[in-house]
View (cartoon, rainbow, N blue to C red):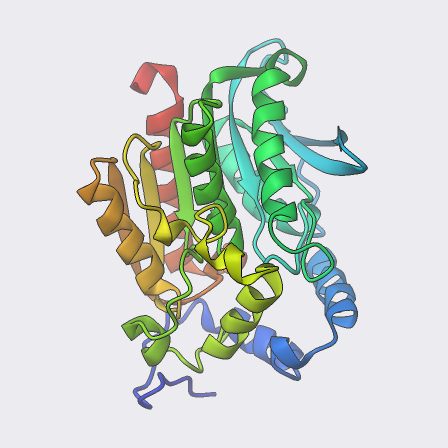
Length: 327
């Protein structure tokens, strides 16, 4: 199976990633934007449950919820089991990806467990509301409420409220960036880091990366446009930085950012452009360009050597930001 860019150049993919990609493509019978939402959710949940079957003896996974207005926000918590349970640990509020339409906290267990293991932090992951049933601002509101709840319930959670970070992949990266903006604007909880992995940050579909990766595996340009259409409830939402962080007029005084972009990803330039804007406005930022991989690569963590190397950089960034003895 040969994968090519939009101009038909062969993709120089990480060889250890290719088995995962082949399996992913073989199970994807039709493009995401043409598949029934309910059927795809069920199929993906079943597939990921089988993949994520490992029992994590060194991480204690529990569940709780936040009562918010007329609905509950389910919360999945990950805590190292080999530390003193009375210790106050740093916390990472993690938002799963899935185009604001798919995914769940449980389906992202391997990523959250890897973050928990690598950092010794508590990972707090909400099952925020999904579009199209609940378009913006529903998912964002749930994510920001989770951040504020984590800060306010620090004692209950056993975390240090002065050592918080937000993180996410793809649409989860969008939500993490939006929460970083909102907590600055509202004088909310201070963040030590915003970890944005191949984030969806803007609605410019004519960037170089969109054109080069129009038909990229895992995520095509058409699929990403579809996700945005389902997430943005009204035309006014397109002008709201909480939905589209790249249009924010001021990116100063935000939490330091660590942004990862993938070579074969329509969203690559979103991350690059956001990093440039952050730097111009004086917000510390590290941009890591991961070659030989497409969008969504963190899900191949178990087999891809390139992804495992990227994880080392991610963990180091978290540790530098969150561990007291390294600040």
